Image (cartoon, rainbow, N blue to C red; front, top):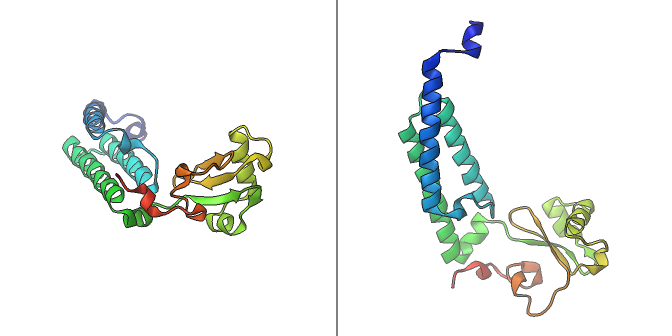
Length: 182
């Protein structure tokens, strides 16, 4: 009984090694074909795809009931769904609001914006930490801090007009149409 916990024989080890190598090669080939967007963490659905790919890979490696072909189909479906969703978001602006959260202005011209901070569950300490990470020692020197859709903070020292990088921040007059491909 205890021996099965530590060593169940050579066949399961060989199966694990072979399926790991095979699934790894399949995944690498598919990722190269699909491009770097597959592993980007721009939005929540990108992160979900990355985690799901890892889970599919792990399931193939550790489960004797899952074949490499099944894992390959799982990889293809996940990458295909991400491609379809990102294409829809890029070409149909209203989909961006459905699929992705919008960036949120949480600090503007020396003031903490309480309502957006509360809605996004961000504290003043989080904002100060974001400023420090960008080398800012005085919040009076900050034009804006934005909570991005991927959960990171963007610290803008000064807002110059036209503020084209802020075109998709609703609180600064931006819109979801700023995400559309030209």
